[in-house]
Length: 314
Image 1 (cartoon, rainbow, N blue to C red):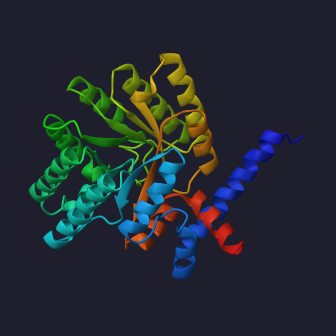
Image 2 (image 1 turned 180 degrees about the vertical axis):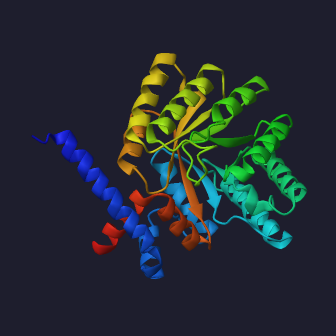
Image 3 (image 1 turned 30 degrees about the vertical axis):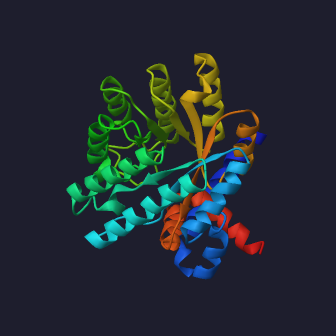
């Protein structure tokens, strides 16, 4: 006789098949409808839109990090335009007294065509972060950028305490990379699962492998003095195991924060804040909203299914 656990697994498999089919049909979904639903996950097109969103998050007891949508720039003018909006973001966060920092994608700042330019832009952003008492997080992108991002982080953290980066638990090299970073000085990292499609030689493919890597890496960070660890997950299992680990190791709230995407797992987010845990929301904004939205949907078929359900709810 089929038990409730088997029925649940069958239901999850069916949902997975349906969601992947929806992803395949994304090009047929009108841009206007994608835009309607994406308003939940994207603050808007302008910096002012994003800052209003941050104000509401702050009022609800949450911090934020601003992400200007866009990546893989191909010329200097695009990279410098990216710097300009981030510089303005730092100024406005300060002038409005908001609790927010910035997250930057190095490929948006010229990494893939002029690495020295990219480094100089990040240095200028760090100078502004010093001026405005703020912080710069270098986002992690696909595996082609992993080594250079971590190398730049090693270099810049020796010059400023206002810089951090990201590691992804689905990469097989992550635990080793984190151990190396911890042995080299003060370390400030965000830990996430990772969303880019990578070959099996360098990335775990099984769900439990990624989960186990996340847990092991988080323990490594917390047991070895990493500063303000960003625990970036919406996975209920990982949130639960994280809470147990924080209690086991008696980690003070100054040494960690949960991090979640705007519009995702809002009840869980609220529960964590209500329980007194620090939490930061990743707030994307900008003209590149459509590319961001469709990429997120392709990388996360479960979200694609959720989006389509919302479309039909009107």
